[in-house]
Amino acid sequence: MSGVHKISMIGAGNVGATAGQKIAERDITDELVFVDVVDGLPQGRALDMMESAPVEGFNTKISGSSDFSAIAGSEIIVVTAGLARKPGMTRSDLLDKNAAIISSVSESIRKHAPDSIVVVVTNPMDIMTYLLFRKTGFPGSRVIGMAGVLDTSRFRTFVSMATNAYPSQVSAFVLGGHGPSMVPVISSSSVGGVPLTRLLDMEKIEEIVKRTRMGGDEIVNFLKTGSAFYAPASSIYEMVQSIALDEKRILPCSAHIDGEYGISDIYTGVPVVLGRKGVEKIIELSITEEETESLRKSAENVRIDVQLLTEHKFL
Image (tube, rainbow, N blue to C red; front, top):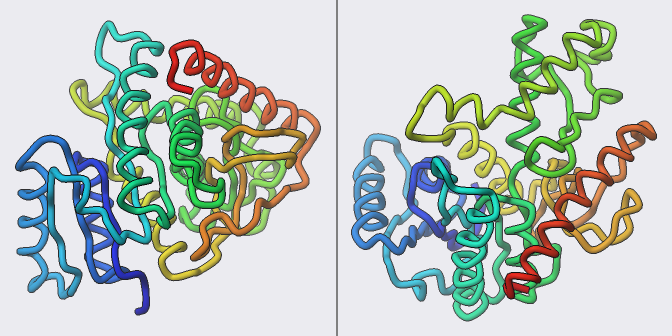
């Protein structure tokens, strides 16, 4: 299997480590590097993972460092670094703290890996992706946010549970921002080619939409002291694989929109062709007027965050 020479994961927590494990085990890169400001964490994760190579049968070389120069030469970088919201922390607090982290990370990427494609996972994801885009000065095609794949996977999961269909038989897209304003595209959702609206009534579909929008919160409420990482890691891997192997999959990702769907100069979730050059094309689906309006409103929520970051001197 051909792939790329080097992939770096900035952030060695549960999401970054689990995604990195999938990347390593499937041999889509010669070298995988974990970088984290917590000294010892990336080194320990890397060594532990490397010691599984004889059992799992992969040949990826894995290392860890707290020095950002270790990302030099990376073709793909995944950014999971950042804080999760803690009890008592406002969304504005989270925005500022993670904006400071992403600003610093952006400088390191621009300095050490100026030709890389960057996949941003840090929350609030859409605005953090926009911030990294602005701070690095990279073209929009090389800065992509991960959430649409995750939100779509959650939606497909809940549809399969409601219809007793095999999960892969469910076809759907969830567009818009990663949060309460996300837009599951009901008009094009199907199970085995059968329109979803012929299998479930609108009341049940609305329940699934609501559960999808609160998917991350539902898991946090169960775990109490943690958040989702298995499904996010799988979603990261699907994006990275499509880029590394130039598969040109059509995946819902947070991308820089400049005119498509009537939206300009913002990041929000839309279907894109992902290949070795990053976002190679934005796909404009035939969606209803109501879905189009919801997508535009979702994008405007990100624009509000842009204004906040501008006021707080991050932009």
